[in-house]
Length: 428
Image (cartoon, rainbow, N blue to C red; front, side):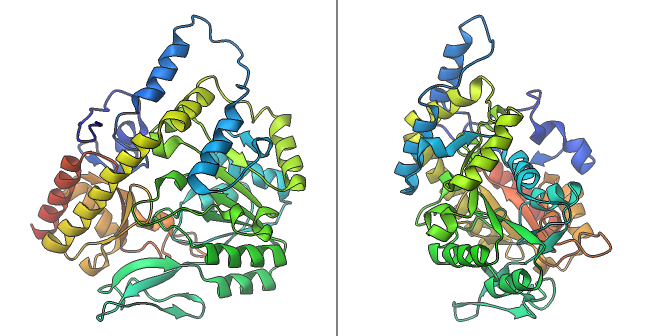
């Protein structure tokens, strides 16, 4: 019914994935599998809704549709089992911008932010650029042992040396270091905000209700506001379920701001269709007041149209797309196990991003990136950008060392071509 095998040439469309290859990687002759949008055709029910509006010859100031927030509320309730009042929802002009707006609204100069690397890199550079110190609470790697069981290692509350002695172990997933987090909260009262990725980017983890409840209790106890970036919420893969942070407990609902969007799921990132959900009245009054003051909650003309079309007509397409992405994950994992066991796939619970574990190649990060770009001619995200920053400002934290992030939201023929190019570069 849907042709996800279709190869679409995106060159000349202005997309970042193609237009910034030279700037980001130093060359343009690369297979582009980095920035997190998909190469699948945006579904017809979205483009048809946009075309219908474009038939009118005037694009003036436009009112927010009466049923815009109601449509979002119904979608969130049906998909996640989270009952959200439409009045608790507002448009925001992008999730990274939303994180910056939360900082402007709730933080004072010198207030600190906690993040949990490896994690989406704007969580770090947004507060740094706004003058808020970033405190790192690294995730704990969970490995498969020779008996097929899993286990995690920590050293003084931090991950084990995953660039060294653990390089040949199969990384399965990560766990939150909640004990380490409480130690940070307890020892530093200037920590006022924690930003979490749920589902996690880059490792694709759907955090459990228990983990989220424990995090919520700690944050509430120490007066630390939680921002939950849930942009991949609609993309839980087979056997997994996304759990909205604010839905797990009263502590979570009363002390959090959630960001969601249809952009990843329906491949409409360029339309900017994000929204925020704030259950707590006091937080909502303050944050919505900030948004209203700068008209930051006023969507451009096409955002509500695309969102409502996606949420009203898109669940069948979403399921079919996820089946295809799941098959891409399975293909990638099996192909690497069979043909290139030195590179391992950390299987995601959600979304179309794969965290590639390349540590057993025993390359420095500079050598690893050079191999991908200049030998395999592949453009992937450098894993080091998701790690911690050392006091000297260098990106050398262990969490991203030896890793690359691969986007498999594309036809399987492209995935195969990329993997074969990688194998040829490594074995040459």
